[in-house]
Length: 94
Image (cartoon, rainbow, N blue to C red; front, top):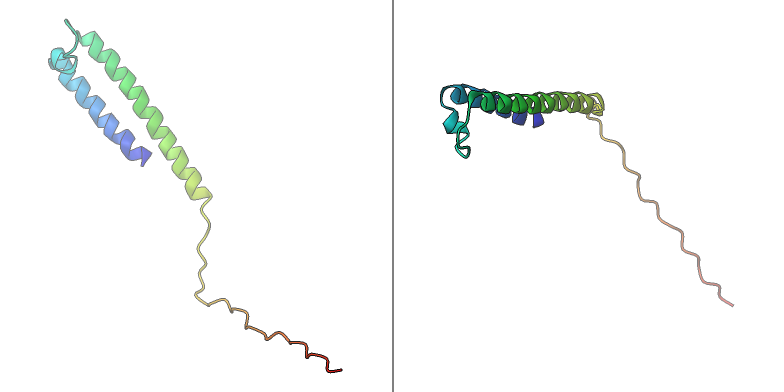
């Protein structure tokens, strides 16, 4: 799941870079005078986050697959123990 989020962030960061290089005001609408330098810095930060998330996602998936328990191949049911009646002591008649 983390890998999918990382890929989405990677696509978003590339879109951020492309749009920001043409119209920096669109991606940094809250700044008074955004420049392409700001866009490059923002893309660099997003790209580093993307690569970290992707690497951790791949690593956790490998660990999960390594420690996965194998499924039993046989479909023979395991015999259940049969109930055994418990002997009841007879009362003493005196």
